Amino acid sequence: MTSADGEGSGDETHSRTAHLAYASLLENNAEDLFENAPCGYLFTLMDGQIVKANRTLLTWLGRTHDEVVGRMRFADMLTVGGKLYHETHYAPLLRLQGEVSGIALELKAADGTRLPVLVTSTVMTDNDEHPLMVRTTVTDARDRRSYETELLRAREEAEHERARLQRLASTLQRTLVPPHLTGPPGLEVAAHYHIASRDEVSGDFYDLFPLAAHGTWGLFLGDVCGKGAPAAALTSLARYTLRAAAVYDPDPVAVLHNLNTVLNTEDYEKEPRFATVLFGLLSAQREGYRITLASGGHPDALLLRGDGTAEFVPTPGGQLIGALADPHIATITVRLAPGDTLLLYTDGLTEAHTSAGATDRYGDEALLDFANVLAPSTAEETVDALAELLDAFGEGLDDDTALMSVGVPRGGDGPLT
Image (cartoon, rainbow, N blue to C red):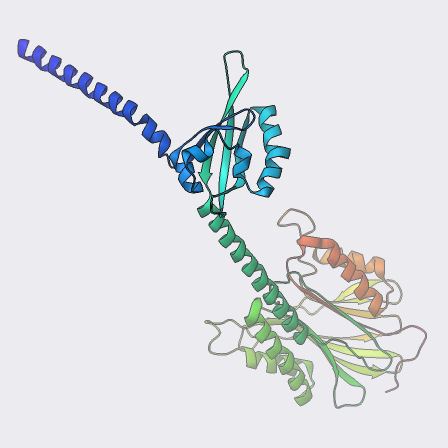
């Protein structure tokens, strides 16, 4: 028992001795901690006169104790801009609040160089809350300034690169759709391309062109899978294949089957290449035009009648072009009389978000209601009205949309067959 008590007394004595040694070490090093702290310390009177500064700050500035203490004010250490900010903002705010924290300033060293710092100042008061002096902590911000400068440079480079890519995407997009459509005699034509994002090229395309047969024209509108450069390449391939196929055999079903042969390759699983397409063959009639439409999985065209009604032109069962070896191609033939307008569009229109809800889409029914209010309408009026609608969707439109409309004007005879 005695041995145990003796051992316990020895541990307590050792603990007290160690505590005294730590306290002595801390007391002896308090001044060293102040002088050689990793930040600058500064004490000034209320008028800014420096009464104490640690060695760290003096070393940063390349000055001695006698040059600074009792001879300089805090504002004397600042650059011209810093002095102005100190007098107009820093000092008044410090007197008002009693503390100012994390202010970015620049100190002027003895050799004229500038030292970016972050400054925090606190007013020290007596027991009656009368201000006595100001304690200021100065943190070296050179690494932070270098980081901010590098970050700004990287951001500027990124913005320049984005602008360059946007110009490239815009230029590439313009090459994928005709700048202007010219239609056959007795037919009005209008088109519009709405870009949802300037950063990416989408895959919508359209065209209208004459064929060898007298009074016969081909037209198409489609949408390929994907975005960016692969979509642009696929769009270009589809557009020129359709034109070439129509020259070879203008039958709408044959045209889409030829496009399917080009897109449906052995590399399909590695690099899917498919599109939805409407291809039409226009033939002149005595009063208007006849159009045969073939659909490869594309949204139905919309017919605005001269009598003020509107209806979809159904092509049910048409399958994606390029996805299958032998897709079903749906066809229908309609007549465009004076006052009638046919609208072709891509699904960016009907899939646009109409509110913040992710599932709230514009849809086919809303488009049909819109057309019923709009009809009768010319080709240009139809495209203009839908272009305004696309603009109204704002950020709810997350996919590019192509519009193409053909219409027979009222009051005139179409070309004779």
